[in-house]
Image 1 (cartoon, rainbow, N blue to C red):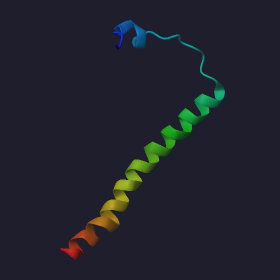
Image 2: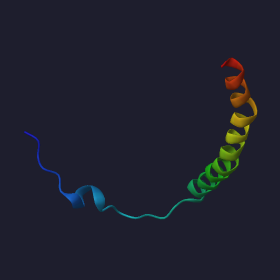
Image 3: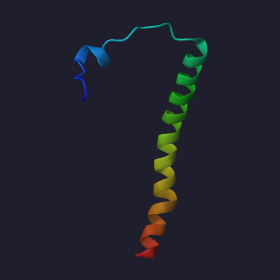
Image 4: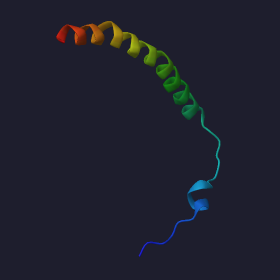
Amino acid sequence: MATKRHYKDWYSYETRQTSWLEAFWMIVFTVVLVIGFPLMFAAMFRYAVPLLFGLL
C-alpha cells in the first residue's frame, strides 16, 4: 500500500550555490534559444511554407 506524500516533501529542498560551470551552460543554452527560435521561425516561413503551398 502506498504511503501518502505530503506537499512539503517535494516542495521544500535545500538551496545550494550554483557552480560556475552550471552558470556557463545556463548562459549558453539561453543564448542558443534566444537566437535559435527566431531563426527557426524564419527558416519555416522561408522554406516550409512555400513548399507546403507548392504541394497543395
